[in-house]
Length: 173
Image (cartoon, rainbow, N blue to C red; front, side, top):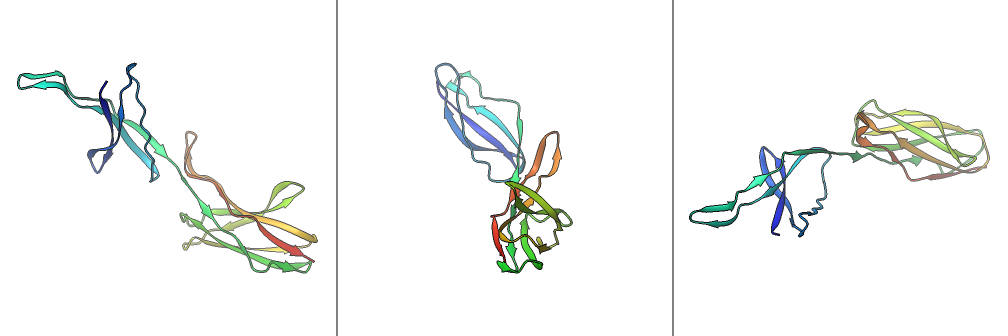
C-alpha cells in the first residue's frame, strides 16, 4: 500500500513530477509527459512510513536514477513558387526547418508511380530556410514534399526525429 513519487533531476535538485498508488502486488505506474528533448534523469522515491517520536518502521528510500532520452521531431514546410505551370518550366520550392541545423539538408521529393523519389537536396540556411528549383516536364497533377531525415544519431537513438512536409500539388500543363 501507500504511494510513491516519481522525481526528475532538474538543476541539480530532485523535483516531484508525478505520484502513484502502490498496488497490493507492489506494482505502480506513473505517466509523465516529456516536454523537452534530451536526457532526463528520474528516480522513484518512497517516503518514510509508520513514524513516531521513537523513529520510523520504514525509512525513506530512492531508487538509483534512470536516464531516459527524449527525441524532438523536426518540423518542415514546403511552398511552391507557382501551383500551375507549363511543362518545361522551372518552379522553386521554399520552406523552413525547425530546429535549425545550419548546413543540414532537406530532400525535395516527387510522388512517382506510388513512391517518393528524391529530386535533390536543399541546404538549410542559418534562418532555417531552404529553397530548391525544379524543372517540371511531366504533365498532370504532380505531388511534391520535403523530407528532413533524422540527425545526431548514436546507438540507435536520434535526438531529432525525421519529418515530412504537407504534400504540395502542382498542375503541369
